[in-house]
Amino acid sequence: AATIKLSTMRRLEFASLQVRNLQVSKEFYTQKLGFEESGMQNPEAVIFEFNKGEASFAIRTPLMDIENKELGNGVSIWFAIDEKIEDLKHTLQQNGVTLLGDIMPTPFGKAIHLKDPDGYKLTFLEPNNF
Image 1 (cartoon, helix red, strand yellow):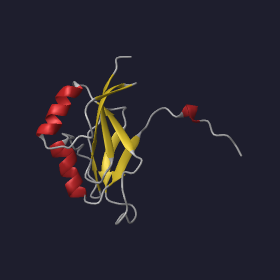
Image 2 (image 1 turned 120 degrees about the vertical axis):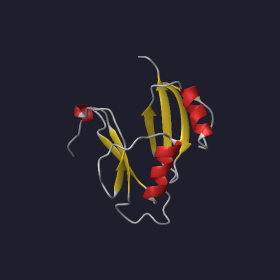
Image 3 (image 1 turned 90 degrees about the horizontal axis):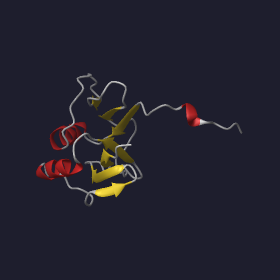
Image 4 (image 1 turned 45 degrees about the horizontal axis):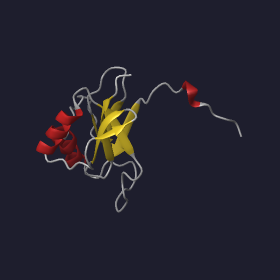
């Protein structure tokens, strides 16, 4: 078998999560987490604002039957933030978001974890200054 070398992979370009109810998830991501819609129109997805040259993120209607399936198992998506993690924690708690534990140190910086309505684990990271 041929060996594949991913050293040419430059960055993650796009990530999307299939969700059970697009409207419920859209409200969670925009109202509870503060994500902003990009304005890109797609009736089957909500694409969130991103910085040019960085990965974009979306939630979308299912591509296959996901009824009675556990979503988010083994998946964790990390978002780097510009603000202090303590400030974000306070805002999330004010917005009624349940956190999975307290702020924790990681090799990459300080992080907090939560789950979205479909069980996907989201991590918000205040990166170390490398």
